[in-house]
Length: 240
Image 1: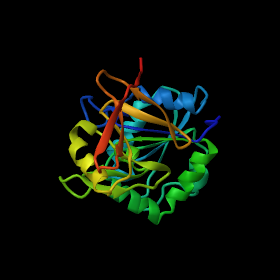
Image 2 (image 1 turned 135 degrees about the vertical axis):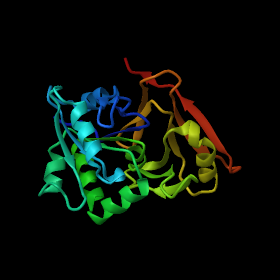
Image 3 (image 1 turned 180 degrees about the vertical axis):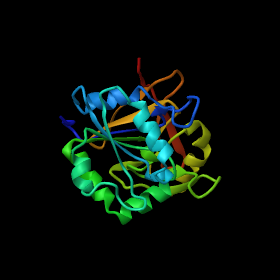
Image 4 (image 1 turned 60 degrees about the vertical axis):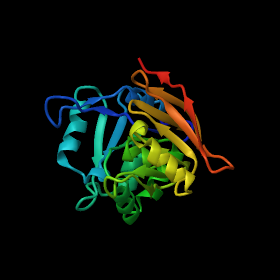
């Protein structure tokens, strides 16, 4: 089954990668939220996309390891050096959820556009496949976000614009720069998440914020008539 409303789960949370080696991953609590939203069966189909990190084999291995023995039907899409599936659109449309990993927002968007992936992903979203991701995989669904893709200085970069807002991840570290970019008009008004929080959109409206730890919040940010950015904290639903 698929979500009854186009759904995106975007935030600063995802896999727990604190294991003893680089591929020792565990799925975070946000995946249960996404599976529920997809109205998935006991064997949800999840496709992992790691374009933002250059499709590294270790991340793909970490993804498969995280769900090993769980009943989740895992697959992945790579674009380097060519797509690993013959029919990208058919493969993605067959999923319950598509999860986009972290990395460079700028590189992700450029490569996706070259492969016309935004059009395919929009069809998936509208068909009820739940879209999700962390960090760059959160920023990408919005009109733009604050990113270190260009270097240590936080700058604005465009997303693929399914959601008509800007986005910031790991907000406590990027708050000052992100607010400045909105104040300057480089980014639209929008939302942000602390580490451990995620935004849940139904259609293009924010439905709720969820969090897997204490002191993790969502935020709404908007520029007022005086050009100042007003921040409103959004209380999350704690994930048990």
